[in-house]
Length: 219
Image 1: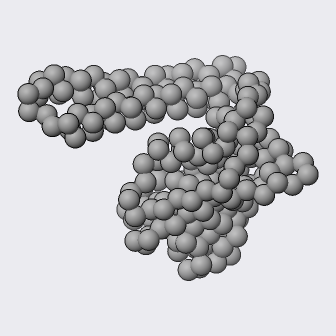
Image 2 (image 1 turned 30 degrees about the vertical axis):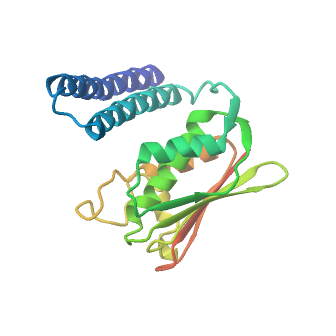
């Protein structure tokens, strides 16, 4: 019964999230029609980008809905080009121009796509959000080991003091007040649950003022 309730909640939540997205796409089309004679080429391109992001977000919501039901049934295993996946993640996050994201050459894995995407979304998104400097640099690396890959997301931000290295993985645990940095406090707990449910582990290496490197293993 709990599983059925969770499925129903996930369906309703995804429906309520997708409805305003569709409205945004429709409104952008109406604006384009109403101002057809006044829009510049740049403005039309911006509206097209907006609709593209809406469609990408809707696809991501569908993926999350599928993932919410995947705890009991494994998702389809497919060939996932991690370099392409990272490009999609960065496009969706839409970081500001001052943020540089550099990724090493990445492998192609036979794995579940959506969970791995969610891990990178949360780790890279957090690095952007909490860096607090004008020259943010995020480096995504990988190391191949006999039974798994070890991925890393490193930033040059403010870092995390060692006494908080365990606390940050708890649900709704935040090191910054909400009036300073907007967020739910569930991102890292989601990362931990996804990675550990697939037999991996996740940890952070950091010190105050020295940036942070988040590492996780993936079979």
